[in-house]
Image 1 (tube, rainbow, N blue to C red):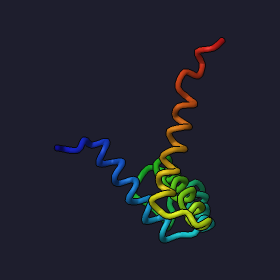
Image 2 (spheres, one colour):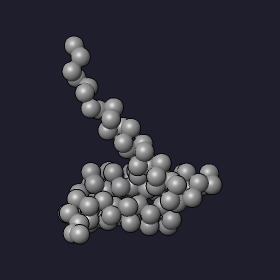
Image 3 (tube, rainbow, N blue to C red):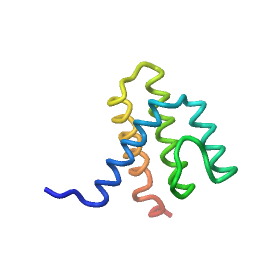
Length: 98
């Protein structure tokens, strides 16, 4: 069974999030986010548009904070996915009420 480009992108994002969450503290990740916004580059993640970098770093920071509270990496990633789904569901149907 072949994977689609979207599936490959998700797998890559998860891999990057895991690597960043394991390598940097939440404070360091936050610093990288600010550095990226101010200068267009940072030491945590590069080679992509700023919007994508800030998105990935924010996810990694969320995961790392959970890990510092004793949550395992796989469980932290599941919680991230859950929060993303909840956020997306909150946007579905908005604007239909007037």
